[in-house]
Image 1 (cartoon, rainbow, N blue to C red):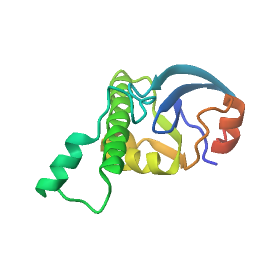
Image 2: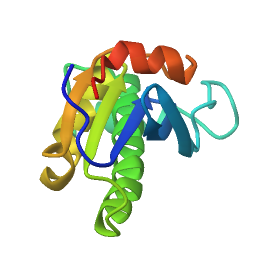
Image 3: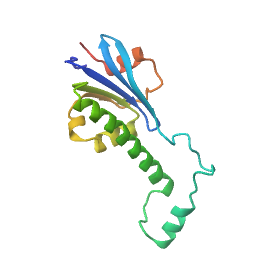
Image 4: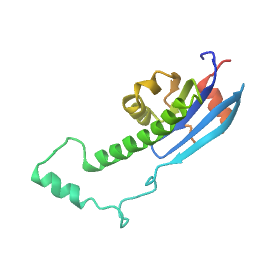
Length: 149
């Protein structure tokens, strides 16, 4: 664990949900915000989503990938979500709401965070844990992050 200096926020996320907490005092979090991916619940087969365009696209031979269209769609959605969280954090950071970040995220989503968040945010990350614990109570999040004060 790393000593908690100044004001710290904790981000707990996976590709469909995220929660941001402020560390109030030792072992105690206050929720600052929570996000749900705008189309996190969309499944194949609903009228909103059709795979047809991407198939036609692939037949033409444009942008052929070794990954399936479905995977790249999933990655696009994860990227959009990572940016959404980053925008919120960046605005808060500019207001001086926090100094340090602790991040616990599902492994693949943590990859998106590391790759897509601006330097100003990633340089504030004191500790990150690649675990999906978004559904767990704050006390348990605290233990996973091993924050020492």
